[in-house]
Length: 229
Image (cartoon, rainbow, N blue to C red):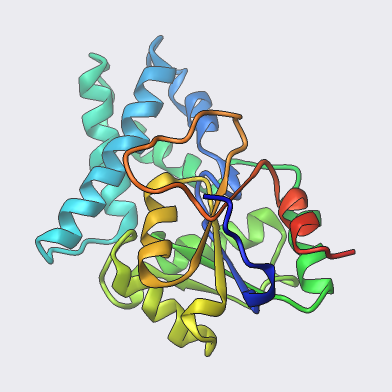
């Protein structure tokens, strides 16, 4: 689409998991328990997304960590790994120490130094986001976090993006949402925000729906588009 309007942007939202931190590092936590760690990690992450969409669709919201707990159990069963509940709880703690992408702090600081307010909009629980902010060392940069748990709806439900606009006190059309998730891009776009796909892997866009307003490979490239210092 390439129809990104820089003049409209007053506030920037960024996703959390897969955008600030690398979900592929879940493989390390699984490697001790299965020789199919990569497959299990993929199933774990994707299944958690499905659970979130289903929970929102049927208005049966559950905490994000519970969603990851159940999807982990499903992933381990799927690859034939027998892991005790105690060990599964230990694996689950990996969510709090995922590898941080190296452009996160410096890239976001460029935005805030230029006057943009930056918020993290996430499906993660509030306590998970507090841990994430500490882990990524962006607490002194961002203006705040916005959790799906605040209204009991997961992205990409449009109501969560509208809630985020209310929280930021900025018209929704003046917000750009940066995320590595294609369905998150669409949720933002359908709500009235500009959707920015953070394509760190250089993969092809899934052309099931419209293309994002903008595609970048890093937060620094996004800053360049906004012409920040």
